[in-house]
Figure 1 (cartoon, each protein chain N blue to C red):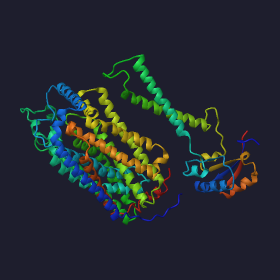
Figure 2: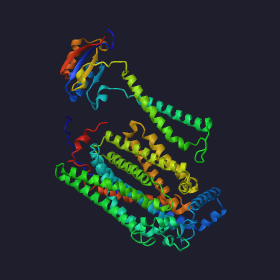
Figure 3: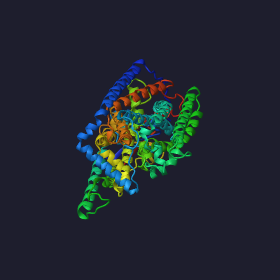
Figure 4: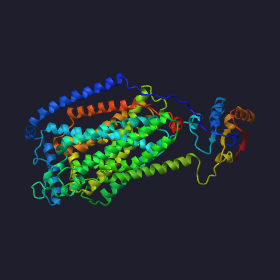
Length: 462
Length: 176
């Protein structure tokens, strides 16, 4: 039998210096955001002129999209025109603001639920190695309630500008805007009400998902805290049951959330892999975040029970699920590429061939596949803080671009882009997320001193 | 005296004593031929001072062979030998080749690694593996010391070092 190792309980202190750094990040975000907003407002005026002058590539790309749209419409036997001119549109800068708010909200929601998902997996799989990092992931779950509130507010503010299907005229069979395809999908959004009224089913799901995610988070956290006070395995077993039920719910809810919040933006288009795709993106980003926080805590002198063996496991997670994401990405791409059905290919034509998105499309693959694959391939690189601190931010930024390209082209068409506005909003989200999560982390000890898996974690060797 | 023929074999009762013992034996200047355990013992590689395996390099080369084989095969077949238009794509278009390329890369690197491992571990089909002590497949850990490689030391001296290092018994083993 292995020796019993004594460890000292650790408590994270959210120091004012750390807080100051995060507030500086927040301030930077706010400055960029305001600058971006001013630029975008001025830009809206020149917008038409720029198009009159005609960027050849943009014009050409638009033609491609237009022709693909026509093909799609023709094969559907219907001449529907996409959102374009038919509805009263807000100025571009407002739509850009709404789009980036929604996109960042969906992206950062992933951090919260993946934190909880990670904890749940540790219990369900009876994993022993992860005692030192489990509560970092748990702390990420403190973001869930805030994400839910922000999501609801953002939805009610932005709905017509982001979600084409919210326009009531699409469901009026006598109106000029009637869209039989979207009309068929109406129950998915509006049930039990009539199409084009209030999307009760959609909003109900959103509330239910966040509510239950938060419920599971509170229960699992409660058991972990109780375990600190009372040295018994009972709480671990309670959490295993909780985790298993959560995982079943998460499997369904994360997929539906992906359809609701991301895929429904391109209302005509669909991909049966989309739930997986969004999950893969969220999951690897969450893993990179857990690893990054663990690496920084380690550098700051915390987490003495986490050594290079545990880092190796986290690195393997980041490496493996970067490849998993690529697999899902390629699976979705190849099927659409090979089948060559216009109403499906339009999605990739928008993203690969139109000017504001095509560089992001390829950058996405470099940041999320090529770099993590090469940089984390060797055993040594996964065991070192320096390489993890380099690769994890690449993965996080890479998947931000991934989400950008999922959301923006469907809303803004050729008018989107990554500017100061988008970067500013992302930094604000990152800073607020860090404030909430690190505050949550400082509330309870960094690892459970009575965790039944603690000794196994201390002897972890790979 | 020929190498790889005459051995002194120390038998250890558990892995804690063994790990401790390996260090003691090595500090006493003995070269260890190999250690046999009924289950994987964590940390034994470091204790024995084994060099990093070169198997990943072999795997990379086998994988590269698979990649180039797959691409060559598909481009030649669909691009030159029997050109066919599928789904309105070019004769030789890369995306549909990726799954096959991936599979062949994995297949060749896996099979190649297994073959390499068996050859370097002397696990050939016609070769009966040598057993220093049959109990190493049950509940004992066995440490083999090659007499020829420790020429300066007598059997008795090696035996004493092994006993000091925690071996529960020490035997001799000679192979023809």
